[in-house]
Length: 395
Image 1 (cartoon, rainbow, N blue to C red):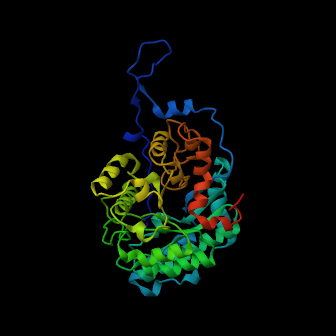
Image 2: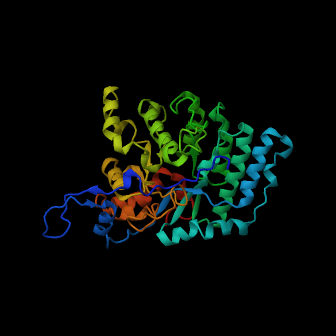
Image 3: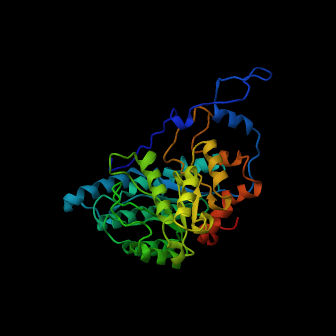
């Protein structure tokens, strides 16, 4: 329905299949070629690892449990694109505080309590942004309605949610069109950042790269307001791409490559971006990117991009988190789960939810205790600097 992805999980995919191991199958027995379940093995090795102390800030949460009234309003809006008589007004949406409470009490708030996270940096459903639907006026109304609900949730639960706004992007519309909504959300609603879609077309990539001066007015306002942007595409309109399985990862990887090939951060030395989903393909191909930068006579990546680009932990298995934390410096990693998002199921190889990402950080044998504390909260406070003014800014 209007481009919202179901985000199917594939427990039997090749990235999670057991690998052959050189470990003995039984103590004292000859070396075995029996496939070893690396997920379960990692889980058993990490059993008994104590939970990290201190707060846990989840930098990547979406409002995926919206009341039906919001989805019905959106249906009417889409119908109104071809029949203006059906176009609803922004003020026509009626959702009570009790409905908002009910939408999160058994979902995001319950999982915060069960998984031990302190606060979620919260934004509208990413696939629901669907910037490719309608024109700039449609996107502006949809963004305002969506952001206002996030604001209301931050007021109902000021210690549980911090707002991040959806921007009213539209294909072919200059990004400075988004400045008004960004300013409203930050200065009037107390939001701490925004989500920035590098491809409002939904998979056709007709916009200039993120490093083009076309985007500069928006960046200037972000710097002035001292807010970061999470790079996040929306639903795939191109049927060649699965929204959460490939389009999201394409967006992450493409944005990073654009940054690498540019001098953007010379022009904006304090501009900050979070690349979600563990950075897409970036950590796995770090040597490739180092080599490309070297071939282009650019500085090392630590100087070229890592003062401005950060990665989250929405990686849904221990080996993936271990790779991320081996390759990317701990100070560039922000804890995140995207829970109730892309993958909601239980991993049959561990018995735990794929998106229960706290256990992967706690189970890391690579990160030191201080680094874990930075990943869990310190880095988010630094990147989302406006969190210091909120009730949980200095717990």
